[in-house]
Image (cartoon, rainbow, N blue to C red):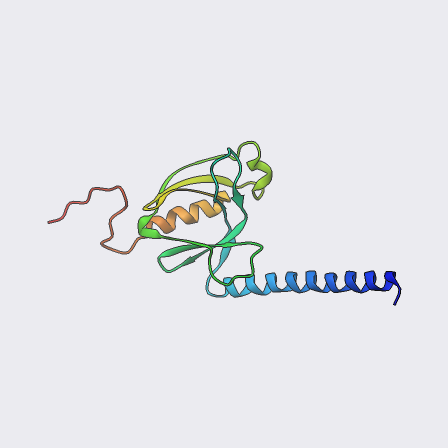
Length: 152
């Protein structure tokens, strides 16, 4: 078989693999969204260099947890998960420098504290409102992190 036919076969096989990968990503997104709505949520995993270290993903509220899934992963499990009782909203800011091209358009960067350290997430302003409502909607009797509840 001539070389050009081998190259054509290899290109065809690579195209099929890319299409299967894209189909798998769509199916995975549907499976993740089946048990509750998902939303665009980016997470900063490396903070050594300013404006760098962001990974695009989707978020999902699952009972008392915020789950984060990498957008281009095929894993059905969340890459990160945060418990609502351990999260405290600190503030928000606009993306700066390289962050503007690394994140989804019109997203804001929020800072949170957890039992394991500081967290930076990026989401749309509408999603931020829902996130703040989710944080405040703790079960009855639960204390807000950082509050000094009095017990009788």
